[in-house]
Length: 173
Length: 173
DNA sequence: CCCCAATAGTTAGGCACCTAATCAATAATG
DNA sequence: CATTATTGATTAGGTGCCTAACTATTGGGG
Image 1: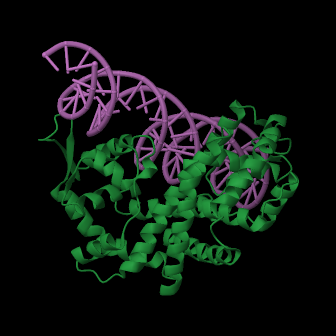
Image 2: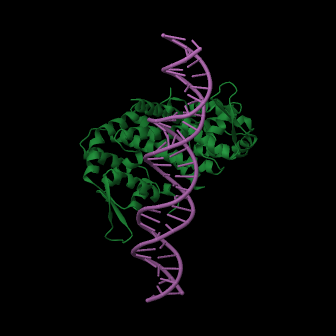
Image 3: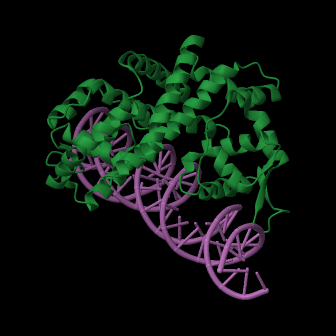
């Protein structure tokens, strides 16, 4: 059992939460703590699964998202705009574009309007890549939530949004 | 607006999902795809929030989890056991222990039973660190899911587990 | 008009995670 | 028993993400 690290649990239990809270004589609600801990574990797990998913196409989650965002925007966008719409730092975009450029999926062109600006453009190969992976990608994405009914998915979407809002609040401080 | 990368959306919309599906004439359910995409975005967002949370205590998510797991297990465990219970690779554990050892929060001792084995032990400083951060940690963890009622949390826990199972299935292939 | 603040992008350094390859020591097998 | 397989741990190399510190260029206010 070497290969799949995810094979282990990684998921905390209610008893663990209880024990941790009791150990310091705190008054926290074990269920709430459990949900939060599971949420973090799930986040990590889903993230890894996404990475594995995109690796099938020779991409990473970040690179795919950049490519898709570019396509959705007519095929060209500045690094700053990409950073904003992807929700990552500009430095990260630099790294993603470096990788994608090496693979010939995007190209950098100097901006005609702003002397210090770039424009990242989707190449023909990049568009082709998106076309090629689309069928399997969407099939798998559906399968990920396939166990949930339409109603459950709606509820899930709502809960997810509220929890993310909570996370935002937490980060902002 | 430079500092908070998370300030951007990062969250895909239903229209984006629809557009992407339509572009290639596929038959996927936009809602399912949206939920999957949001799930991945949420996973990334929650993960970052966790990182910010633990950074307040001079830790990372991985380092905290290792420390907590150690404490929950009587204060000592082998790297392989840690890897299994944390759900990460042994190589990752090596890196986490390196960092924690540098900070004096854990120590490595040769195993008395297995000549090639180590035992990672929680030091007094490590235990103290856990004690110090516990109150704020649990308070914040509760706040993360504070917007949800007890019933909603129960539902959420169930949905989360099923989605994670879906992710596992997806990864296994 | 010139200088200085704001902005675009990259670079440098750090952390977590992975896989694959390498050693050391133990178990298993002909 | 000697050789081989397995297992414990680390190292090497890759990716993504972050913040902070540059480099250029643009543009506003004295």
